[in-house]
Amino acid sequence: MTRDTFLALAAAACLVLGGCKPKVNYKYKIAVIPKGQTHEFWKSIERGGRAAAADLGAEGIPIDLIWAAPLKESDAQDQIGLVQRNVSSRGIHGLVLAPQDSKQMVPVVEETVEKKIPVVIIDSDLAKPELYVKYVATDNYNGGKMAAEHLLATLAKQGKKAPKLALFRYNPGSESTEQREKGFVDRIEAEAEKQKKADPDGPTVRIINDSNYAGATVDTAQKNAVALLNQTKGKVDAVFAVNESATNGLLNEMRSRELNKKVLLMGFDSSGPLLAAVKEGDVIGLIVQDPYRMGYLGVWTLVRHLEGDDVSKGGKDLPTGEHLLTADNIDTDEIRQLFDPKLQVKRTIERPTFGKK
Image 1: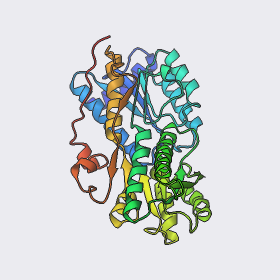
Image 2: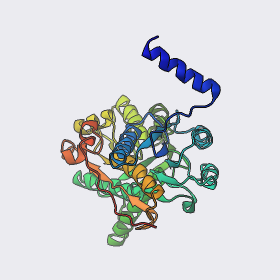
Image 3: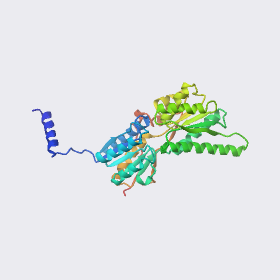
Image 4: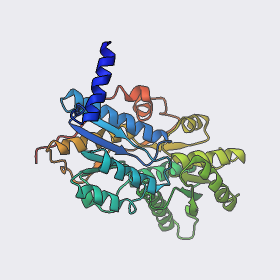
């Protein structure tokens, strides 16, 4: 009998007799459940989370990291099911969650916390902050303001001081994109008020369309962009799309109508096609997040909490930063490390210092 055959038979016997338990080679089992799996953003989140797990393991805290992503970002029931399955059958010690909907996900997070499983929220906030130990995310409101400022500055260089704008929203209930939308609208309204004070009878910048939603995918975004562009035909100077799929879908439809470069497009988040579009001048800029850092700090903060650290230092929020990407800085390492896998693996993430509880 060979050694491999012997080991296989021994393992089978253990299972039948129920007398052997599998060796556990981790201290904590952590589930990371994002909103979806298709966008480049989530792939960077996963790389960051796995890097944190590797670093913690090297420090003597081995982690079994479970990545469980819903098929669609619009399927909250799928995400709820993933949380319930990981809590009930996989024996997780903690959960890192990017909620698809700030309110719909509250009950399943309550169930998780009732089982003494701590939760760190990433990317998009939850309606009940008292349920989680930390919120690790972009300042999305500020990101929306930054998008408005770059758009206004670019239009001003073209001599358009009182342009007409449109806002291409994402999905109702997505807290992160709703904050971007609010930041954008507030900044535009503040500029309009400033112009009105300077010249009460003169024209001001204004948003002429903000009622169209892109939906969860590039395909739905392109289909829904048809209505937006039809409603604003010949009237709009620029559009702000609030996430990766919305920007990609709108860009595709604008190109099909040869509106690229004629109507300015400001986007949010990055992907291969969007980066190429910035270089080509079809997108004037992107507000990019730091998803690698977000994934890293989400996992790392949760484990530090499990280890007894007081992660409440600095309040509930742990910001990860937002950055303006343009044709002028797109090839710099400082910007590329935010989305380029080859540069991400070389990064050393600065970690906050938490004291013991």
